[in-house]
Length: 405
Image (cartoon, rainbow, N blue to C red):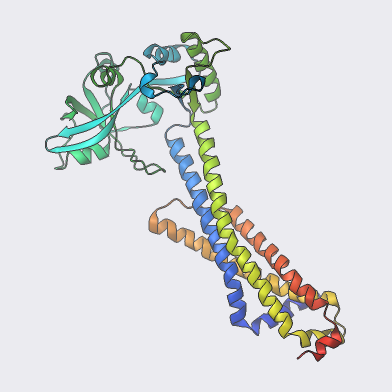
């Protein structure tokens, strides 16, 4: 029996039991659509995180104290290994470094009139905006002169403006208080919205790092040094140069553990990709369980079909049908159910992903890989779970099958 006749006979048999056929497909439909949606959510999250990290500067490098030096975990306040001179030497002596900004952080309460808002203050240099790819919407960035004289000036994000200036006042030039210290707002950052992790990127206050060091934290060391390499490809070379400069400044010998550590955006991106890939695999695996359940449903229905059509099988064999023909007929029926359910599931999963993105704004990305994978799995499930019932039908004794009631 050729393939065309096999498909015709299989379709006719399935058409005789439309509802049962549809209910059998339903397990596959639900399974495939679930896998598509779960993989789309996972892939969308991965792309969103990658885009978010890239928006901060794919060539960004962080220099931090080594908080776990010699196996002993130390607090940030006790680590004073990074100095302003380190930042200056990195800028001067590293050929593959473009911009450098010392960074110190504190947290406190902002007050303007009757309004107040908790905020983290970041002490930085003017280069910080270039490194983090931030831009000023109103006003201007404080200057190197402001850094030298530890001026009490700042720039703020949109969230800070919304919380403090509830009557729509122009914040430029206004004096706000950080705890008890007055700061004049000289600029407002362009809004960046929430990050992939849900962090409000506009809830920020930037001031000269010298001001935060002297007037707020009373320290002389740095907590972090932000660096941008000349290009993304030059990041590794920049890291080597920074390591050499700091080893020399801190008198670190080859056998000694450094009192600093250097991380790049590329490392962060690789870590996040690993995490999101694992989550995506987990989500896809959980959804894939329903595909197995659907396959078991196909096996169950095919068993019922073989039992119901035992006499028909006997008649076919008595007029010359071979065991392989019977095997192929029932196997094709199982594959048709599985593949048809898979196609419908792919369509529903794709539409569902689009609806989720439109309704929630959540990052969703349907990849061609997930569609091809789902279709392939459906076909394999049809063959795998349809084989045994089909084999049972092919092995029936024609005489006994004809006598079956």
